[in-house]
Length: 182
Ligand SMILES: [Cu+2]
Image 1 (tube, rainbow, N blue to C red):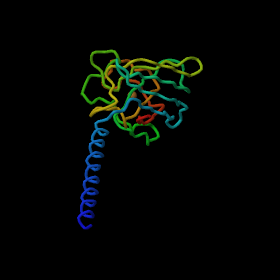
Image 2 (image 1 turned 135 degrees about the vertical axis):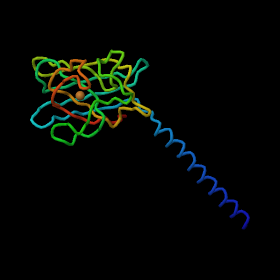
Image 3 (image 1 turned 30 degrees about the vertical axis):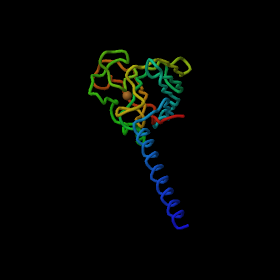
């Protein structure tokens, strides 16, 4: 009888430690990242009315970026991922500079050299709406240089795609933090 109890206890301890190891293994996988989709909800900075949604979806060719924005002035507006997921200041400056984990030169999304955050420009129509869809070969949803937890900024002016390091796109009219989506 005593022996049976002992065996039961050994079994329980075995199971608990085994499950612990299992969950630690999965935690490791999670921190490496297996995000397939991310989302960013943009809110206007002080004195602006720009809002919208951007999704980032992993595909075989790269990350598909889909942006739907409203409240813009007609024309082109710089559109970047910035280095901090912090939209707390009224002017969006707490989001920091362009997300540039590999120390590259600022450029267009299809340039040989670009910041990971360089998504070029959005172009708004007469009604202030902009829609953009493209596949980005540089943006990463997983790993050390993941865009999760960074921010998206929309600028008042056009990114000239050459002025260093900002593209001379002017004030920040909207800011949102990028999060993992289901
Ligand atoms: Cu920017």
